Image 1 (spheres, one colour):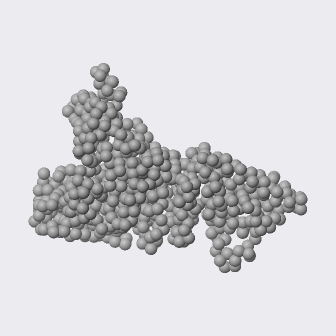
Image 2 (tube, rainbow, N blue to C red):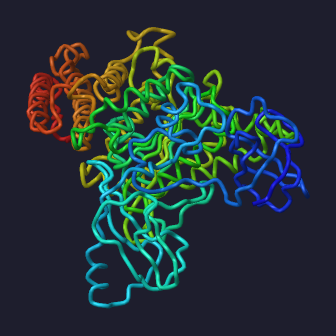
Length: 602
């Protein structure tokens, strides 16, 4: 252990002398209260340290001790359902120790060392050891399982970097604490149930797989228009009150990821309180149990130490990679990366580094890349398929998407869900702009979606084109009014309104509409675009637009999303017959006049 003394204090940044023998990014304990910090710069015999706790009362000359290891997370059974701060201190345990105001230097085990977990060894390994066969210990070797919650089974595996050799002993079925050694190797290595891993170091995998499997969220505007793949990275930028947190809550509840990690990074205390109180009450639609049984929460509110905010996203993604290595699909909700970037800016200023655009450090793009590049769908060391999908909220000041955090984030993500202030004020949920948003995963996900609906790519593009046409026509309407437009252009406005109300908007309080299965999403969009094509044909035959808008099918088409349940899609076919019958009857009444057959166009 290397010992030094505090030489200078500048908020969360401390200079200490006598630490020349320590390593970069080593964890240190500062002062009599043993405040946790991390070495971020070494200059001869001096070290620059960022501390993760309140340093009030710290004095010049206070002792500084290096632990000799980097900032690491303890990975093992017991993570699920736990609420941590940015450096993996269990907040519920600390609350019991010191009350609502956490004391500097407070300590708590990331995993409860007193609790025992029921370990079931891998049956194939037990059989091989019984027969005297040699089992080579390699990274990712499955050793057994622990049922962590009703929804998640924790797989105990040989960690990355294990020295190898043969498996000499394996614990039998029984109850063990997380620090118990459950396997030993012939080279003298010991494998405990829980293992440490440096949070700034990505966990290895065998291969990176193509992002051709969608992360189904149940939100139509996301799944159909701007889809995200499993292992993809997306950003949700938006000003205050546009619905970033609510959109992430909906995705966390309904997406088909098996593990959810929610990182509250620098958010307001009352908003984080809502998350902590709401998540335990949310019901997992798959199991019918609490969503918290497959969720990990990391809480770093805006009034907590700024350095812990900076490291919180690395802690979160490390926990995600741990479950990814077991073969799970994990989704990370980072709210918000703008507050994280502000923490970088403050720390950089304290270290007197040269500022870049808007005061952010020059390495902001590098740090963003380090975070988002840890997303991916991979083949794990044990040969399984797992993924980490990252959805990061961005809070640009004043909703200005040209500010540095938003612009640099766009360089490293392929899915951009821009929230629109006008939509949010109009109570259009989710307030994702169909003009400013985009997804570069659409082409790779096309084969998957076309198995659900062969016309997915066609109707998706038609709908997006129609919404863009509607935006241009709306500017004309504001100048001269809708009555000056010909009927075919007014039909564009009407169909776009149906698209907005009957497809893009979802009611999170409607038991039918709060989640939409992929098959229903496609059929709903197909019916809306089919209505537009057939109505356009009627107009070309001479039918006035008022004849079309007076049909009851127009109103029913907007309400179809709430009328047809996810498991009763036959209602879609009934409506399609009704719609086609009404429009064909209108078509026949005008066909004799012009001597044209609309049916030839279909």
